[in-house]
Image (cartoon, rainbow over all chains, first blue to last red; front, side):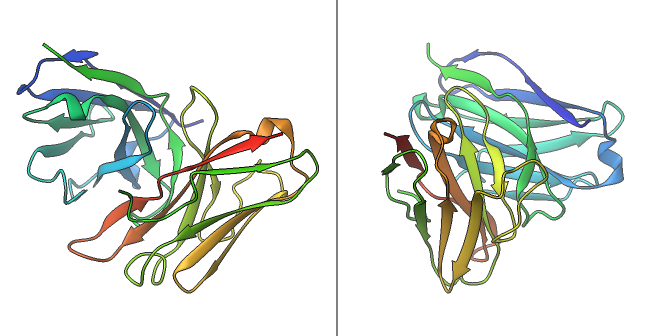
Length: 120
Length: 111
């Protein structure tokens, strides 16, 4: 079955760039679907960061757009998130997930999530 | 502050029927599908309802979704202790270039 696994540093210093990767198994990203990133600050709700298609077409949350880059590497069957100029407010569990069909559809498969803390 | 509005908490006793509301606007719920996610403590969200009222395979028919105008609801019948979780609604918003919006979440307690 399709599985997603996030990886990356658990601690990032303020003003630096947060970088995470989501490895996809059981399905080839090149075959379709949008793939997204969602985050959840401790004790708070979910926030969509953005989604990407295998062609590289992206959609970003307007509130984060100036700091976010999502890219895809079909040869490694993975997609990545970069969030620049981080602050303590970016501390959260970061999830990668698959959009059901279109970017407007639900996220039907999720990774387990990875905690990222922004602190010096 | 979330774009979609949910009550912060809800509760019910085993066997009871509980509903959770989600209020939005014409640019999100009013013109797009609504989704519902269940998040058990310490775990990733799980898709519960898609396209307003469709259940993914494996989701019990005790869970149902509905939408009317710019509001949506999740109903849970025959409440069970394992239903105690956080529930989030979500939808696509057509404003700006389009983006996903979530509700703030509802903590369901089974008394």
